[in-house]
Image 1 (cartoon, helix red, strand yellow):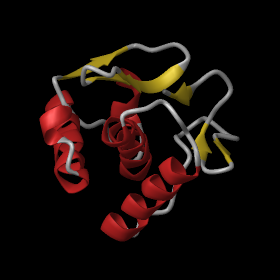
Image 2: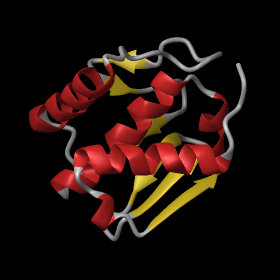
Image 3: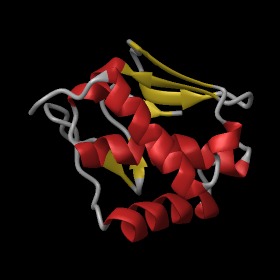
Length: 122
């Protein structure tokens, strides 16, 4: 699998933000090494993604990106029914994608949430 550049990844984030309607809520998009999560977002609009996402399949990157952007849309940290329904709807309706585990990380899915041995999403 070919790694995407930081610029391409940031364009993916912005494209999803436009679809979801949260472009105005994004203050900063950061990429850095993260030990325990694939991504996180702050209430002030700072999105932080693990640099390892650059080498993951596009469908998995999309799932992580949409997950964080839905947090911005809803304005809370909940992973409740509405949150899960929105993530699923955006991924299925916009791209027809089904979730894909990242390379080298088995057992990454549980009840619609991204999880792994040591990494999840914020």
